[in-house]
Each structure stands twice: as C-alpha cells, then as structure tokens.
Image 1 (cartoon, rainbow, N blue to C red):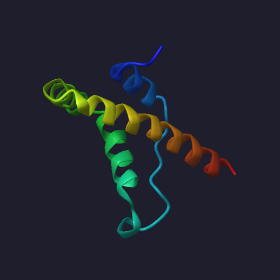
Image 2: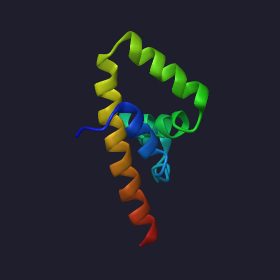
Image 3: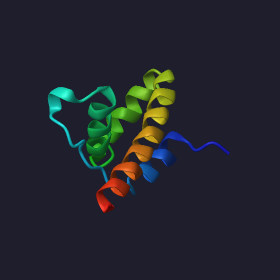
Length: 84
C-alpha cells in the first residue's frame, strides 16, 4: 500500500539531514529542496502551510511525495558516506 503524504513526512523526520559538502554556488535544485525539507518537517507552522497549499492544488502532493522519497535516499547516502 502506498504511503500517504503525512506518513512520508513522519518517516522523513527520522532521517538525519546533512548539507552537501560543496559551496552553495554549486548546489543544484535537489540540494536546495532537501535543505528546505529538513526545515519544513521540523517546523509545525511550515508543515501546516504545506498541507494547506497541497489542499488547494492537489497535484503538488505527488511532487512533494517524490521529493520526500528522494530526500530520504539522499540522507541515507550522506550518512553512510559520513560513517566511512
């Protein structure tokens, strides 16, 4: 069964975000999105605003869900790199 938007957010809270190890001028879109997600999932007011916006424009839910999944993969990879 597919996870809901809220389930993915709750799951994403369990991941440890680490900024990319490069100057910001070299960041790509995902680098900025992942930083924003790390802030969003830990700020209840921003999270509520995101839910409201997704309610106004439901296709955003699919975009957020895909980005949350990539965020979790990114966090896993960064944390594995950091351990080595």
